[in-house]
Length: 512
Image 1 (cartoon, rainbow, N blue to C red):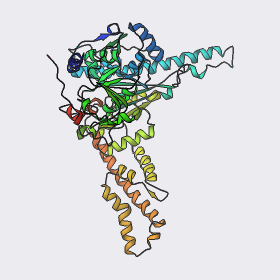
Image 2 (cartoon, rainbow, N blue to C red):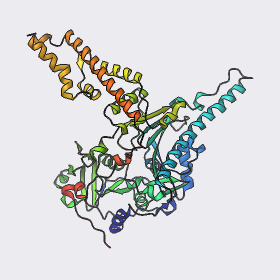
Image 3 (cartoon, rainbow, N blue to C red):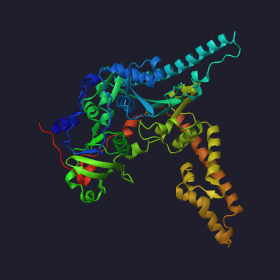
Image 4 (cartoon, helix red, strand yellow):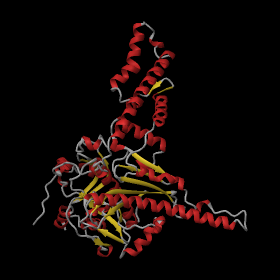
């Protein structure tokens, strides 16, 4: 079992094999022959599935709006699919990916097909909901001819004002209003579509970072890679140390907390201190990126109380160019950043991206009937937006005789932080020291007037700089960025798992 698993991990990046629910063993056969993080007396339920028909029913009961929408060439994958299979946890969003099923398609054609497929899916959803509302309104009008007081219950209509599309880099986040169900408290559904084309389903399944999430619902079937099949059968996943960035560590903790054991082949359990166990106390295994709070060690079973991310977290394995494009969320599964921002916050975000030259961080948004505005290559930033936004910033930077230095530095890159402090504070203090004024009255109404004047000047300079950047940007032919959310959550540049496991590393080899 040990060598079979190590071989599965070694081949995970190249295998073209895929499996269905019919291939999944009903019996958990992991024998703890490698170090495994688990919890005492934990047993995560796994609903028995024999084929995909029952899953299809559960999928459309959970996402009823998709019954009327074509999912051709779209694969649902990740936590949403896994949560339906295990029924042990729930997720907030549904992730969809484009599968080409055409190895001969050129990269340019593949990108064009993927972009068009995503836009068509978004249009199909909006048009379906709009058509649904129109049909009910026609029924209402017809009924009112004989029953003037008749009206359609508002809960039966889609609130199209809640329909929102946000795009950051290659991810479209769609907020879809839903009709309230008795068993469902949600008013909206979040769908994320990643516009990276995948040649085949096997190609898509190979991209996952946590093996148990490598489960896809595609063309009415549930599919697994060899490693994700093992992970689902045994409710566990492997951490081999080849990844160590912040987003990955967060996901390791998340899925351990959701009931999945963590197999760490390179963890040397003989180096774990055990003295505290005799007193009913825990020991801490301090890996470079992750702390394991351990209650006991029984052979290769490591009984863990909790996994905790190291703080502060050193993410130096991501290069500066990738880190600089982080925008408002770290990787595609973290949808809250873009989807939950209101229009004003998005304008402020985009202005800051403009000021810092971080054009890959732009959020392109559309709402309601104007949802297609999210299909633009860049967001619109008007003079009016600049004036109104900086008026708001000015009021926040200095309010009630309090200077918000953080906001000052964030919104006025026209000057360095030290220059900003000089303009707002140091020069004023030096002037009044020279006038021999009492320190007690330094920061009185005179300072309020000073800040009003300084901020007016800074706002004028920063708006002028922003307008110049807009002119320059609009004069530059648009070239699609090669930076993707996947690259921001890419595997670390670590050459060896030894860097992940540190002092607790042991070498694991695959037998021929």
